[in-house]
Length: 271
Ligand code: 0O2
Image (tube, rainbow, N blue to C red):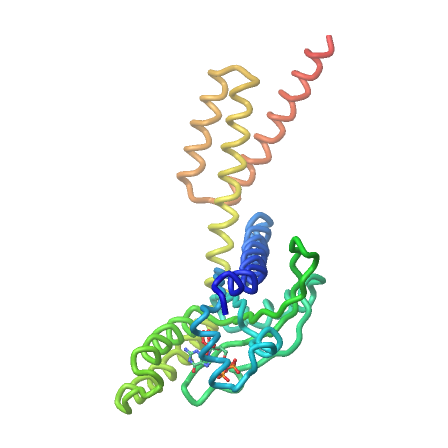
């Protein structure tokens, strides 16, 4: 097999990984822009390396011409969530999309692997546009919590180091660590509402501050500079109070002032 051919085969998968990660990152942004809690914490993706594909072909006795059908994870996307409950929500978000078709799912959370591995896997169909036209390909989406990801990342590197022959004492430690991860996820779930409230509060505050500063900047262009400095000082005073309601009230007042200036400048332009 020539290197060029591999590049041609893998290129659409690169595109799929890039598009899917962009789309999931955009979902995070959409939630944040709407002051909503995002069930997705972060997203990453990769195209399986040639050596890893070859290894899988060999291990599973897959003929080369069936590679794209049978190796379902040439394109891989990993979605990290904060809480176990978010995983189901993310799976639903994916199920409801028209650009991603679910082929199969594996729930290694309800059915943990013997190794201790936990994660929710979706094998999906996704179509990319190439110079030769549309290409429907498969991708694996792994959805897991930050804690599950911590365990899987460490265990994966140990598997790599020991080439599947992890010494018993290390395997025992990993089993204990897997139990600790389950306990950690459960503990976090029990304070999920409090954590979400705190994160929502800081997201709402961040969006408000951005809006207020944009408004102040626009006012600075349109109105009396001394008045804008006064408004800015008032903003700093209210910000220091750490009171979201006061900040929201100030935001509304500022909107009304800005609207007044905008109307005034339109009137001036028309006269
Ligand atoms: P990589 O390096 O991530 O690409 P299998 O039959 O077990 O060889 P299959 O049928 O493709 O694999 O699916 P499975 O078991 O659902 O595994 C798919 C992927 O899940 C793996 O891809 C890993 O990324 C991850 N995974 C599965 N089991 C484990 C585990 O015990 N530990 C860790 N850390 N990850 C796991 P690859 O191709 O094995 O590896």
